[in-house]
Image (cartoon, rainbow, N blue to C red):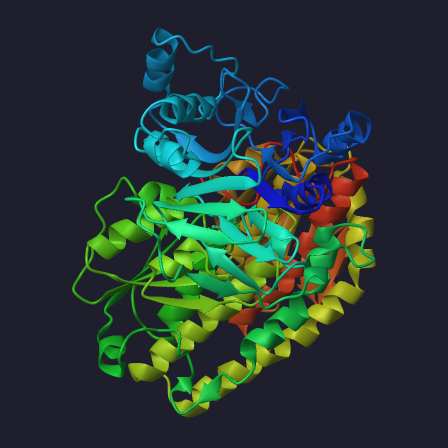
Length: 615
Ligand code: F6R
């Protein structure tokens, strides 16, 4: 949710800033801007509504020179996505520029206060107040010390922020600050860099400083960096992380879009995750911070997440309840935050979050921790807030997920959850070693089954034609694959803007069946499992009303194929609980083909952002 980059050094700032924004664009893409401290001693910039590509075009003719600068790509919260509301925002003198990610909750009071005191606020954003507060502090108590001015201003803010600030009167310096929104810093012989996450920095270094909440960083053009705490005391050993993927992991590498690339990367991601996991504890999960006794005592599990990651929780519930026989509560993080959860002394709370920065999920985790739960995070992003604030963290090691619609993180998170379920079951004695090994081997079979589905993507391309001119659609599944239906519908609507509703198939007759008419597209997930016959009956109900049915079915299922317009074939899966991991690949591919046929940008769907850092 908004991407920030900053640079101060010996080289020109604009090339890094624009490239950095491009790689961070998945965080928000409704407007963008850049502000550089030029050799004439003033700040000069360009900002515009639209994508980073538009900003690049504008910069090509703006001749922005200077070796200190900040830039921003926006996902609007306060104020429409216009040129005027794009960041960076300036103070009244035009000598202080600020980019901000997060929300300043008390901005209305601050605007009123600043206006009363003679400041002219030009945008509708919550962020602009920060530049004016720094202006006041600079001229007042901070007496020309930029770190002190930012510290002073931040003391008046409520909400969350990652900030990068430059000042025309402190050439060769950038100041950054963080509370609740991520910010990382790197340096090399060319200078010092700041960014919202590690993606723009992976090409520069494998080692970054991770700013903690309430810390400030002073970046200098000789590449030196000093981190201060909230009292202005230098932090001797700032927290650091090592980047374990190379920069090419975040490039297209010959694919038409990141969604295609990330769908294709799934089998390898799962293989990485499963490597060396079998051991004396059944499944080895060193990431858990609980003793054997504590694990065995767990009497309920809360699974908490948002969006696609919430769907992982629904599948994980089935796995934990079947393999470990522990009752599981699944909660949307945004809902749990306003409930009174039924926590016992032995409740494990598992948060599932690709980005590790989803504000609702973090808030829920903090709450569950305060209630005494051990919080275990399943996440993709190294050093993310979820990882840092949890008692234990399992990284899914899927590599950077750039497409806003989650694909490889979804399937990798399901596998991570399966490993947790096996570990819980083995520890509390509900499954023995032979059973653990059998389920584990079944998981190991999944990557090849996925490869087979990906090789059959022409089936999805053909089926996509049914949806191109549709106005709505319905996804149906039963048992564990009701969740596959939910996820398929979410993928389709978020990237193709075609309405899609998902229902447990048996519930269709209680309402959604009224939607059906001639040609209405329905997707039925009907693998060979214990509810197969029931699903076949539901498909009958669909086609009896003239609707068009696309089935996800197991190889050889001629009964289903003969009833449906299109069949998306999956190979036979070794057990029912792994079918969602295989079947969903077809639905990812289907959504992508439908979106492309409707002319949509699959990687950057409208109104969405990859990392939702506001509640
Ligand atoms: C949908 C999608 C979102 C995310 C949700 C949670 O394709 O990606 O629904 O799953 O915003 O994000 P994380 O997992 O980063 O907490």
